[in-house]
Length: 507
Image 1: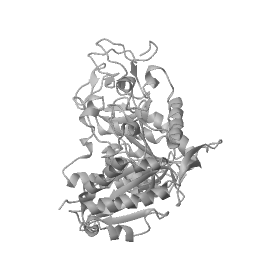
Image 2: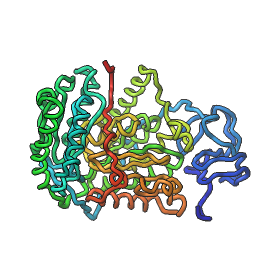
Image 3: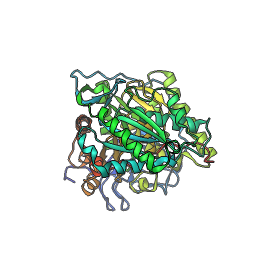
Image 4: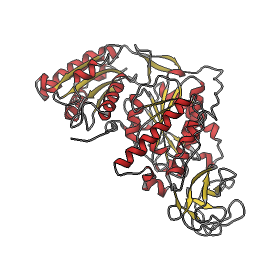
């Protein structure tokens, strides 16, 4: 850290706590004249004034909980003395909705133009499975392609991706869980980063292949095939037939070439995982700037993880373009309160142990930092998990806070790029969609540089502005969308991160 960098930051004038930007020793000076009473780790909170039991604690100018014990000025504020409290908010639909000024200079990227009007950032062939029981055979097919090496004859194809999962049977065939999985599989089949899809089933599962293909055309380009292992004649014959089918599909996929496309064809999933006390100060607000830039150019960004906006949803409903959009988000919050209650959980089961070690205490605090990823653009729409995004701009897609599951929904909804902020150091990737990793602080970035694409810690260490960092992220979006590989792609991630949301009984 440079000498000019502050050691403690007060994020809003009304905050009664500060965030340590370096490890503090007892007697360290604090904003407002107090001094630290004890050792306080970086990323953690320190009281800037005395806080009485039951009094609200403020960060970002918003309440993050109430004191559960007397807190002296200079004391550590964390799980031992900070709890949830009453957090009812004024949703004030549309009160803060302000349209962004459209970009004056058009920008473009080099993408794959698909028959349905979408534009891909990658050119994969996918083996999409209807049920866990066909997952191993899908992997066997992909391994056979690698072993035979014929894909080298098609340099314009990024690879063959087996999309396998743990459900598709042992479930009801006419409930919310079924509908959610159905949307997820159909959405992956239509994602523009796939040049073609082979849909592979077992044959006797609940999620029947005829139902999937009978509901509508899976791909506008026709580069879609399907089969079941039972009807084809078992494992070996299915592998042989799949190999022949994929070769035919490769002939179609090879004709795709990167051509210029306006930024309006980018749809970016906004994610955070392994968050810490820096997330809401560096990477998340910087990603929010990049999100706004994308929206100003006509693009789409998707915020998700409903349990991790809990208590901060009013910041989004106040930006809703119409009252019904704001109400749709409130309805999802109410659904989650009921869902967790009837399953013996609670919405404040977050933050995780890793989040708490990084300085986060309540879900209110975590959520306030998480919504910063969405910038300031109007909230244009609210969608169910894996529902196709049809409204450009900044939108919300309902999902769990579990990162692989949430990203799965975003990709099914049409994301052709993912941006992922992390403070603890999450490692993952999401084929067929490239994932840009943003580190919240420099120490973790230096330690895990092979996994991180951008260091946002220099906002603290070097005084880089959040706006400049956001522009850096936006420019990387365009390069990655045009073919530059992310760190997770170079490492080969994406083989196990397809995680559909399982809702309902497993029978």
